Image (spheres, rainbow, N blue to C red):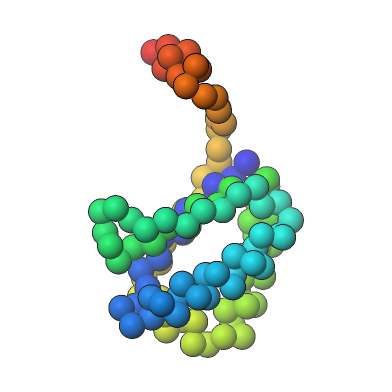
Length: 112
């Protein structure tokens, strides 16, 4: 599984328009092949930063979405003016563990 971490700093005047664009892209990405999940967050430490966290099955799925996104943004030249700065990180998920409150102690015992 691949994690994609996208940090976005929208322009001050473009934050509302960027949020609308992000909603439009969410509809597109939701049906995209290989997408496991996607979330969007507001930074707790920097009120100007937004974060998108998505998980994908394969690198090829990420690359295919990236090409699709480039095509979409190239058709909307105003979209570039909404972003002041961005940073994209991709990471390979080495471990994926889940449980409920009954499993927390066992999880932390395993880490020790």
